[in-house]
Image (cartoon, rainbow, N blue to C red; front, side, top):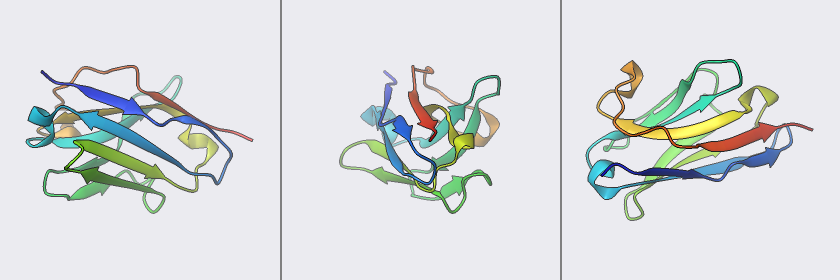
Length: 120
């Protein structure tokens, strides 16, 4: 069974920070890379950061230097620390896992995600 549960979104002012959490079922967490995606109104879903089981990370250019993805193996959890948030970061954030996230090869269902709103 593939389960991914996102949490941690909210309303934050520009320049603020949030930390998102994604709890992943153990049978998936130990096998596949996990990524954070976002979808803003009227836009396509985009991959913003991902982390392999070995800890290698990748970031979209738009979030490099501001977002940090990490994983806690003891808790089957992947985090997305978001700093220096901008209004353009406003979106619903989702997590998913799979063999090749860069090509869109994911194995989980898209859940409800967690809303991040950056506004003054």
